[in-house]
Length: 218
Length: 139
Image (cartoon, rainbow over all chains, first blue to last red; front, side, top):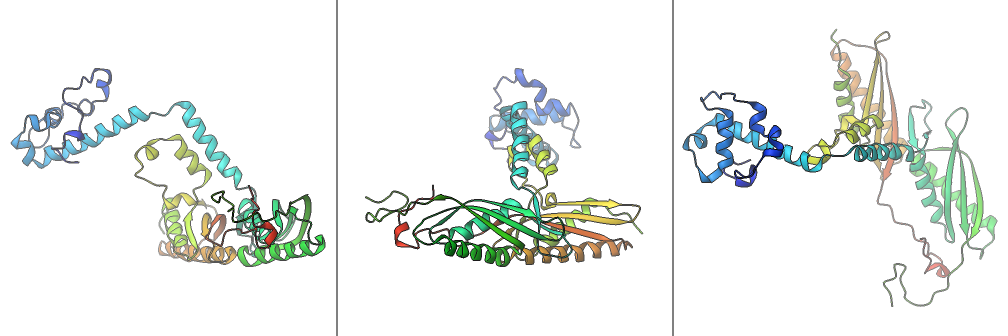
């Protein structure tokens, strides 16, 4: 940070009384630099900025390094003072971290004999729901995966909403095929069974013109 | 024979995992996420993103001189997850074994690769393949 940058340090005429204990110069005390200057003096010079230019400070490596370090410390202190998190904030962050971990779900084995390769249930479920949704007239409502007691095989259980304009067995076959294909080609999962539950009906909507799905049409 | 620092092993493993095609990033473990949540410094200054090593956890069993590593990966969807995970395991095993051998260690190394997420750009869902679904809204 440039020494001559007046924004880089606390304004010289600012009354620092409420936070004097965090003034960087006070933190380092009256240590003397190799050039002979006191750190506190160098800091005062820096805070004075261009109002009182000091030829020595401008040319002295030690003074410049001290000023740059204290400037960073000053900025850091100010940021922390402004954004000091409350206990509630920290607690919220901890809860968010735990929830994010829980959202991964259980870890399922990939189809590898060593059983050292795993994948999060939520990730698999998302891919398989997407595969089922590719079948026209089908919407996957949920997808649960249950690992077998031994080995790497997994049972898939899906609930679906479908339109009733086609026979259900044929549509279920299409969904099974799509899900099995995604399990094998996209994930690498050994599937022992696919249970489908059709729990609701999708209403086939009739076209009413060029209205788009996002509502931007007339 | 010299001692091996788990942090060094994690760093080596992270580099090896990230070098595998299909690995987008490493997913920090819960303990790293909690540590991150408990300190505001990283977020406040935004200058230090989580290091890749946060996605690797290495433990050493001195009695057997055995290492156990867990690598948590976020993948892209351009390859099958199983294939990428296998490559990660082999890449990490080779890198870690090499590092251990260089220090005179010959202990067993087990590696568990966990895929936590697959990020992709596959064609988004289109429900209106049939004419009657043209205006179907999934929301």
